[in-house]
Length: 259
Image: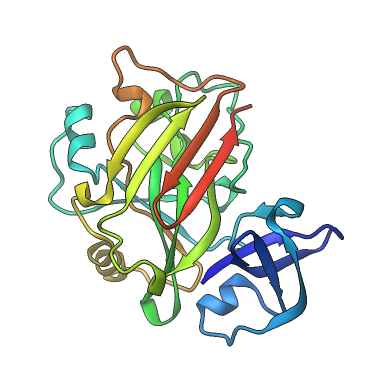
């Protein structure tokens, strides 16, 4: 099942199930979070073509957004870092959430804006994985380098576009073998597979759960592969007007402009 939150042609915000090129509305009392928490799926008697709706960030309001640093072996190599012995966990604030179509707004203080295409876990009930989606862990590299805490570098407004919907876990039998690609202005920058993850999805969930209760709708960005702008020679950071597209097999794609 693919669960989306969208703005219908009548201007109302609804939850729905994406089936092919159509989104079937759920009854008005249901949200994506409700379904992830175990609520019975009930469809309304109407739907719309995907082309006629605006896809929004799937889980509203946003829950806690966890993220993992340095979690692809080849990304560790390109940064010159040391392979971590356990997951590096940080949090992106709720205000960083943006729809799958963006836009991403670069603060005036930032000069080195970077993309990070990431497989993202969406939590379900009882601490279990409910599904997966695509996200961009947008990062201000200049702030990240000079500030020991990453809250501003990773958590600025609009620095977490994600979606385009939540693909429920039963449709993704092996999240450790998904192709992930990122393009900037049509140029392929990241071309990897989640098989390069150092810590897998279940391992990450178990690690975070040791100290934090994971609730339905919480997100966990699992890390980015090699090919980020910082790692290129010479480095290539995002500029106003650039378009970033991130696609993960079985999960769909998000595409957003930088302002």
